[in-house]
Length: 443
Image 1 (cartoon, rainbow, N blue to C red):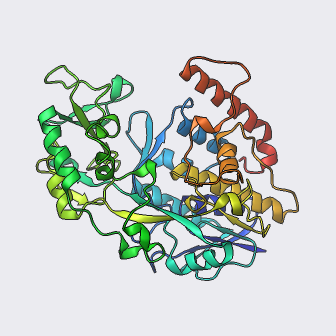
Image 2 (image 1 turned 135 degrees about the horizontal axis):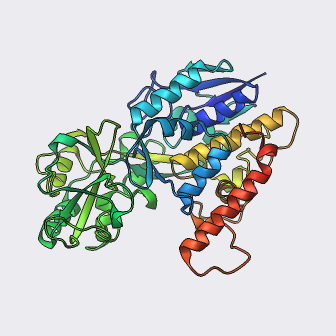
Image 3 (image 1 turned 90 degrees about the horizontal axis):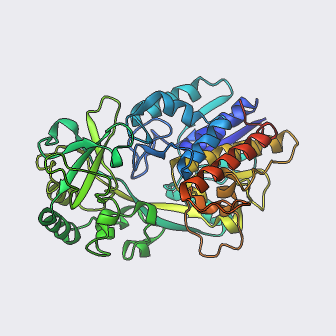
C-alpha cells in the first residue's frame, strides 16, 4: 500500500519520514520547482521562509521543550538542523540552503519514498497527509474548501537580509543579551534622536498591495488580519511610539561598548548562513515596498550602506478551522484516513509544524497497521498543541505556537517562573518517554 503526503515543507517531510521508517510506501508530492508560492524561491524541501531561526533551544523554554520532545520522537528536521546550524546565542538557527538541501537529499535517497513534482489539485480520497502549508495553491485550497466547508486566513511576513561586509561595524557591535552565551548577534544601537527619525520614517513609509496573491480573501487586502507572532514592523510601530522598544527593538540586556550604557533602542542582526556572509534583521518582518525598505532600513545605525540581498515580503497564510475539523491526532473527523499537518492546521512556527507532521505520520501509520493512533500526553508540549487545535470549545480560532501556557499546571505551586518552567519541562519529558514506544516513532 502507498500513502500520499502532499507538500514537502517541514510538516510534510516529517510525516513522510515517519511513515517510511515504519515500512510504509510514500508518494510525496511537492509542486516546486514546477510551481512556486509567492514566498518561496528555493527548489528544495523544508524551505524556511520568514527566518532561519528555529527559536530557543533551552529546555525550560517552550521552544526548547518542543525540540527536546521532537528529538525523542526521532525528528528528521532537528537531526539535520544539528548539522547545518549557525551561531545564534541560545537559539537554534540554521543555514537555510544547507538545511533544505540535506533534507531533500535524505528523502530522495529513502527507498520507501517516491517524490512526485507538480501541483496537486484534487482532494485525496484516503490514506493521505495534507501538509501544503499556509501558502497552499489556489486550486488545491479550493478543493480543501469544498471538502472542509471553508477556511480562515491571516497575513505573514519575512524580514530583509543584508550582506555582512556592508554592515558598519564602527557603529554596530557584537553581543548577546545579558552576556548569556556567545556574542552571536550584531547589534545596531539607537539614540533617542535616531529612534525618532527611524520611527517616523517607518510609520509613514508606503506599503505594498496585498491583493496580488490574495484571490481567496480579497477583503483582507483592505484590512489585513495579521498574526501577532509575525507582525510587520510598520504595523506594530503604528500601535504606539514605544511599541517597537518593547518588542523587536528592546534594548534591555545590551550595553553599547562606546558609551558603556544601554542604548535607547536596538535592532539585532542574526547570521543567515554558516559562512556568516549574510545577516537578517531580527523581528523586522515587513510589507513595505522594496524602495521604501532600502530608504527606511538604511536609517538603522550601522546599515547606512547596507546591501540588501533579499527584501522583506508579505503573504497570505491560510489555515483550516481545525477545532471543528480535526481530532488531536490531526485526523479529519469525517474521514479516519485523511490527516492534515503543518501551519494549515493552525500550529504556528517551524518546529510546531514539523512536530504536527510527526504526529500525523505516526497516527496514519498506526491506522494502516490496524492499531488505534496514540494520543500524546497533554502534559507534553507536542500533545498540548495537538489538543489546542482540536479543542471544540475554541471559538475564535487563531494560530498558536508553543508556549508554557498550553501546559496543565503542576500539582504543587512553584512561585519562581524559571523553576516552574523547568519542572513543567521535566514532567513533559518523563511523560513522553513513558509513551514513546507506544507512539511507534522512537528510533
